[in-house]
Image 1 (tube, helix red, strand yellow):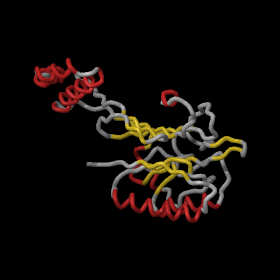
Image 2: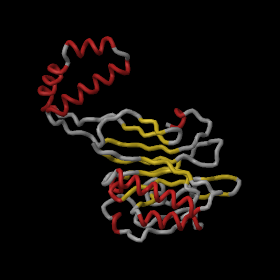
Image 3: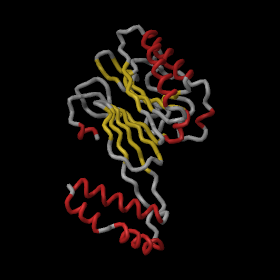
Image 4: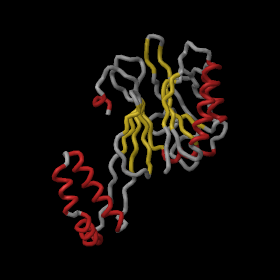
Length: 252
């Protein structure tokens, strides 16, 4: 079974950055070892400013919609930023801020009494770059200094329910959609008739609204797959935010 790990990051600015990055690298090594060949995404508050520092290798962006060179509104580079980019290069990770549609130039992610900066990032590995569709810094009024980030991907992931990744990241897979073809109508109808047995009808009648919906959706999916109805591309949306005292429905 394919997996797509997602990780949340927070670097405490009061800690020694070298110690933090050693621990972070050890964690990355474990993730890469456990999920070889998988796409993965990191996001969070890195408390590191990388300004317009560039990746050494930019030819890998040729078959993507991403800009090879990053452009950020935050031009400041600090020690943690240099250490962070060195670590990204070592592990073939790429910052999506400032090069993704929706975030060119890279918008400020922190706005507070100390000024404005870009310290919250979405980061991914090389094999996931072609899947990136857009990234946005959401201008939502909050009680905190950090703005929410949103990342959208094109993916062929199968239909899944919303997954809650703790308090900071929500992953939402939109239901699968099909491109209807009139010539497949009769065969599709036959498949649905065969699939909707008396047992299935009983399940639907005795289940909750949500459970009935899921059963019907699965029946539709099975009928469509049997006759190879073309599938629309699934859109995967990540939203990263801190707990701002807002109801999650205000963000999603």
